[in-house]
Amino acid sequence: MSVQSNSPSNNATKPSPAIAPGSERLEPRRIAVEVGRRDVDQRLAELVPGFDAPFFQAGLAGYSDAAMRIIARRHGCPFCVTEALLDRTLLAGGRGFVKADLGELHDNVPGGIEDHPLACQIMGSDPREMAASALKVAEQGKRGDKFYRKMAYPVDGLLPTTHVAERPHLRLPGGEQLGRFDPTEGLGDGSGDCGESCEEEIDAINSVDDGDARNEPLKPSNSNLSLARTSSGTIGTPFEVIDVNLACPVKKIKSKARGGHWLTEPAGAIELLKAVREAVPSSTVCTVKMRRSYDDTPEMAENFERIFDAAYSMGYSWATVHARTVEQKYVGPSRWTFLRDLVGRNPGKIIFGSGDVWEVDDIFRMIGYTGVAAVSVARGCIGNPWIFRQARQMMAGELATAPTVDEQREVLRQHFQLSLAVTRNFRHGEEHTSKLMRKFAIRFSTHHPRAEEVRQRMIAVGSTAAWVAVLEEFYGGGVGVM
Image 1 (cartoon, rainbow, N blue to C red):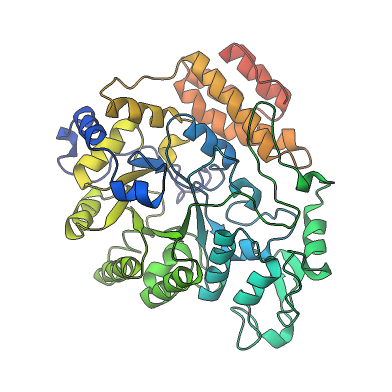
Image 2 (image 1 turned 90 degrees about the vertical axis):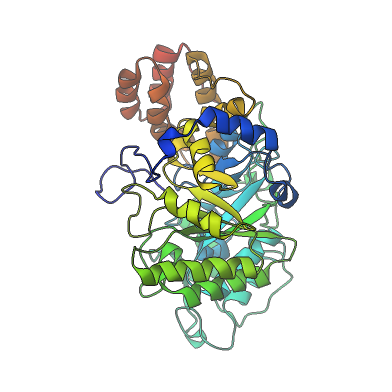
């Protein structure tokens, strides 16, 4: 997800209640205490050690990088999901980090020992590409980029987009050129070096002067955040879960489905899920993110059921179901009634819920109303990591406390420091971080006693100096330049 403000069809709508008749009579504090007494579904703890509470941070495009995830974890979030990564972005790989139209690779690399447990969310249009990218994630790229591209683009048959004989260009979505990939070339020694046809072109595109930094962890002072690849090009810290995205309401690539568009093609969606599940080791936890339907027609409702049932039958551990349709995108209310009925029809399945969780009470309203095993917190946690602390407080029978100005300042300081670690290998990394933090700070400002003044000042921030000045004026201290 991305929060924007320049389109009538985006997700920047004001918080609105879900369609859940009778939920207003529920008592979130009572439900929270009951949930705290019975603990999280034991199957979750067995599948993903550390997943010890019935809520988690969703993947949010442009937001949920390692810095945001770690801040959430420091406030009680037990599990996080990366923003959606395209399979072709993962397969392009390379020493450089390459921008894609959905998320940036470097933002989604596990952020050291603090950033766990973590799910890598992937999406794409072709079963072979999805299978290869899922295996690369599961194995942390240990066989080298060329091996996984060979798996996705075999010599015999057709490539997903172009015939093998034409030596296709390897491109990212949007047409960004990465050079030519010849699937007839040998696999080499598996070191990750794919030669001039790809690696040098990637480096030229990025123009990142990283020197020897690629072999060293990126660590801000007083932090164990580590975002670097190893010298072989692999990522050193594993993901615990691979999550297949069949929910994102992105546009199609030409005539090919991806994300939520797969809900219109159940046979293709099932083939894709099967390819991923069969490609990765049986010990790897695979999950799926879905929307309740593509639209509200009976045909699309049947498609959902067909895909949903198939996922569990082939070994997917849980489904996170967003209670809006793909056609709705992020506008209008979600239907918790759908989630309640889905859980009722599938008593043995682990089902997570998503949609219209804006504040901590909504977490427990959704659990109490629908019976889901866990709640995906998306837009409700942008600029509000305290939602996870508050949830744990309520489960312990305590009052949920709002953040003090001092606590806000400390979180902003930590978030800025961690964000600098994420962008350290960028040119103008501090400038990039300042602009990135501006959109977070606008949301953080809602907790400040002078919220509108802070918001207006944050909107104008364009440099580290301006960012620090606002913190000093309104929060009683800056973050400094790390």
